[in-house]
Every structure is written in structure tokens, then in C-alpha cells.
Image (cartoon, rainbow, N blue to C red; front, top):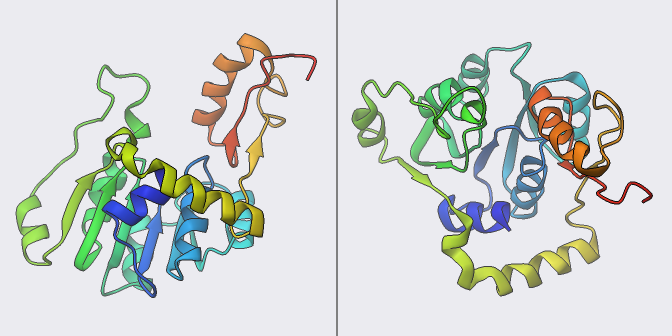
Length: 217
């Protein structure tokens, strides 16, 4: 629901537009990629490993940028000199600062989260440097907006129906990661919850991380 409603309502994605998804191989990101592809957008996905690059290409990403091996800003500027129409940011921090410089005319940057601030700080959303922030938006007629799913509760039934149909016809295929690559192995029981959080932050997970609370499952 977050990917579908967020991209439609805040991103206002349209066929043919360029859409950049950060953390594209993550639990939310891989579904955002598939939703944008279903809308016939050109999708760019960012990730942190060669394995994730392969996965993102398999679900339809038109371009994949491994920010561990390539400069994100330079890659976007080289491939999309006119900027990106919609940016879906779940990372925050420096990533937000970099991507803000690469919005197209009338581009939309949607802030969905800021995982860089989820540990080691008392701020859920870390501070960012906003030098010339107003002018970066003004000269492009661009916008930056936040997205918080509960505010869109009235749309849930409509989008649940859409997603169910897309699941049935194979347009969207969620990927579940039970933590086989996590330290300590598969995520089970209450201990698996703590390890699951660490696993997400490790950058090794692909898809939605799921913990089996019933260890016999």
C-alpha cells in the first residue's frame, strides 16, 4: 500500500516519466519498482551490491545504480541530464541532498523515510544541509513532499483491490527474505526480531524481511 498509494498520490507518476527508487531492492523499494513499471514508467533503482543489481534488473529496472561502486549524483547527471521526474526517497541524509539536485522541471521528490537516522541518533529523520533549497525548487517548479500512509486510510479498499488483482495476474511479485543470509541464519522466534532489524541495516537483505515467530514453521 505504501508504494502504490505514495507513488500515485504524492509522486503523481505518469506513463513515460522517469522514476528513481532508493533502496530499490528493499522491502518497500522492490514493490515501488514494480508499481512504477506497471504504470509504464522508466525506473531507476539504487542498491548496494552486485547481487541486488541482478535482482533489480530481473524485476524490470531500466537502470540500476550501485552507490557503493558509483557516484550516485554523477551517474544520475550523466544518464539523465534533464533530471528525474519522480524521486522516491527512503534513505534521507546525504542521499536526499544529492538527489535534490537532480529533479526535472516540475519534478517531485517524495520523502517516505530516512533509514540513515534510524540508529545511533535520537532523531528519526536526520538533519540535512539545505543550502539554496528554495531556489532549487523555485527554478524548476519542483516540489518536495512527505508521505505517511495512515493519512490515506480512505483509499485503502481501492488499492487493496488493485494489488490483489496485480498479485493474481503476476504484475507484482513480492519477494520474502527469511534471513538465510543473516548472521546466525534464518530469522526465527523473538530473537529473530532483533536480528532481523540488524539484518536490514546490514544491507544484505533483499525484499521484505520476515521473522518466523513459530520456530517450528
